Length: 390
Image (cartoon, rainbow, N blue to C red):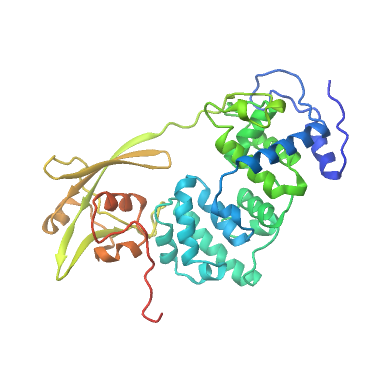
């Protein structure tokens, strides 16, 4: 039988109303029929335990040392679908070149894409650039302080707006990323393996996250939930014995989740064409046109007409993943005079000095190949080209 949750404040009342009568089977069925019961005391203890754990166990990450909303925004966009270890270095480099929202707004798109190269999902960089322009034009260069205002900016959705608003400004709104989603659903004992009802499950999860939020320390609590999901409440083999929420968790272990679409495999081949020109060496590159739905405007190696490469021409093989596709890539060394016959024609094809590559927005695959080729003129750290007027 459900019992009434007696709350001390309006936030607790709203969360109590949500928790009453919520069935532990969740969306998709399974589990027991007992109702989830979180008293006000249980929620208070949960908040205290999680925040105490976070103080002792949080990773020392550069974006956690600031309350600057611009810097927090940059980190949150970078962290979407990208590993923390990759983001740390790129975050520092990005802020060196674009230390303020005005600097980002005034930069060229090519410079932004160059600094973003290697992080993937380049639409995020373009939308980030557009949003920076909107902040300067509509808000005088001052980041909006509420999630609602932030969501009005290009490319900023529910997750990013809640993260910036809560961490930088203390707005009591829950952040729900994949890690928080997993923590909440396990805590509630909800299954999420059904292909139907996912929208309803997402709505319930968001409500639950807001019900559990500590409004007095919204930013810290949101980061604690994300940290717990990233380091303890793992998708596989969760470390339940060390979890501060274990006493209230209805799952304590893995829970059934919807099976993701399997990665598919494809073969691909690219040409590495390098020539000497006076005192410089140059490489042949193609630019992806605006009609490309993925990575338009970025530079890549010319595609081979046939991906099969004989051993005496094979420079390297590698695997590269983009979204749901694993590409098994062969790189062929091609002489200048054979490039036209062996590669797929391109609308925009240029010879680029190897010394200039680091200032060019390259696809992640192209950058990976060039690094593995160990070209002495190429560095992994992009340096933006400066105009002669500087």
